[in-house]
Length: 226
Length: 115
Image 1 (cartoon, each protein chain N blue to C red):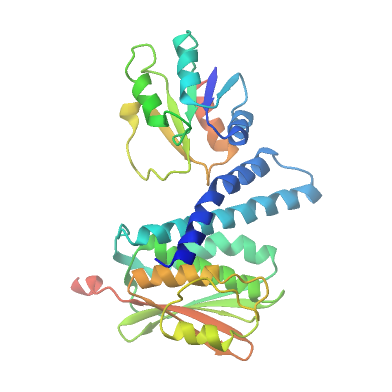
Image 2: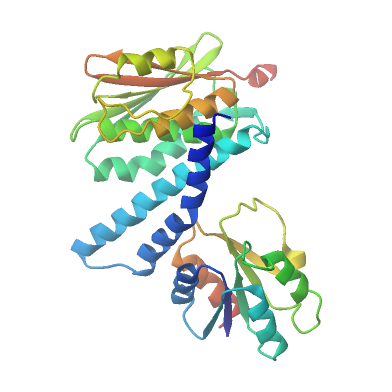
């Protein structure tokens, strides 16, 4: 593994314990009055997202051991679970989430946890970069013998260099995207690594008013046996 | 009485705050084992696994080795992922993940085993 990437993963591991402590501290205050409760719940929410990213980074280290089992996974079950988890965040940040399933193949060959993280990272990015009052879209559809999960945002366009890197199907290391302020490229890097493990490709489509990120997973033929 | 064994002081305090009641915090397994050897038998133990010095499983091996401590219910509080693993042979009645647990989860075990 790239030394720089390995350094990031080690640093992430070190951050895990303090983040868990911060979250517990915020929780241990108990419910507060309306004004302070907003700050407290924000602290909990931010630390939970950070813990999730740290855990995802820890998983990247374990990918090389091949411990993540591939199995038929229902795309809808995973996407529904992610959108349920992020629903509060979208509402809280005044973003709308539009969801459309038009896939006939219900099952893909994937690892459920890894796929969950891929969709989670795409949607979190979309929420972050879509402006207040705009929406993000999650669309699932068939793509020949694959299923494409696509997340569209209405944020700044993706720079050409990142788009070119994504065209080859994966991202080598986290790169901050200047046109997308505050971006570390971490979510995209995690999604890319997990997708690669699952023999899936990630990609992006540039729009004049935003970007669509997608992952294409092989359909599972298991259901057709019945 | 409830024992909390965790080398992370603040995390231990958070668990103590959630547990309420009479609580004793230990920063390592040896201190907790010494207290038990001195006759302090807790109703419930919240135990971290990755401790400085002997780890949580070394502690559990001790508690299940003696007649007077084998029945003490233990709740593991760790950031390690134990999945569906059955740890009841170690006297473990539950596992709380530090990344996901909430004060109510701690209280649930206190209500059940230390009231």
